[in-house]
Length: 243
Image (cartoon, rainbow, N blue to C red; front, top):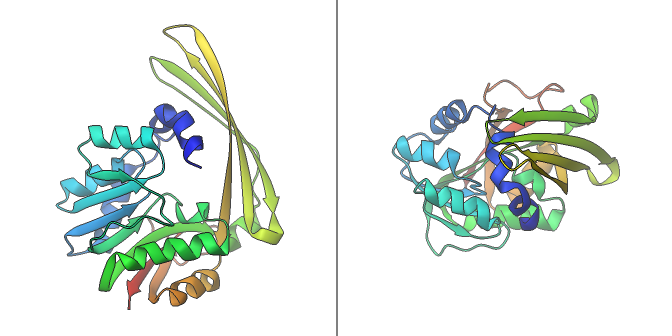
């Protein structure tokens, strides 16, 4: 998966410029409460970490993409190259966060179990683990569909075509992206193809992996709104406590 994100990391922030990072950082801050040290599993280009640092948290992040980490380091983020399933920092944190569906990239039971294990090994008893996933009820009700997203700035125009393939027996949606990039300055273009397998989870699924790794679920809620998850809630946030 690292090579997927490396291939288009320079266009990543443009593709997600409509993402309200400030609102998300405010939301996560409320969930974190009065803690100091936070380990971010899958920090990407460091935008969440930067905003949380400005709120007083001491952030440390890991990511699989070296090019994304290069951008995070430009923001002053303390971060390292690492896989959320196997990384060990040899230090403990007050909380662990993992945002933008990093958990859903863990498509097998072994993957998601190792993901939980990494979080647990970096938390003292009572520490919070906060993450978001694709919600099973919503995915099955709404059904993934083809989409096209077009974004541009003064330098580049990006057209992203999304074609999903649903593997219901695995609770996985294989998201196939074709990204057309037009460089306005050089008048050159390129096409990037990627496959993002994404797993969706029910509450019972998450509870099973949480319990196995000595967590309890404090609550689950709709991402950002805090509403009760429903068939209209694609992203659900889980707040867990290390036992």
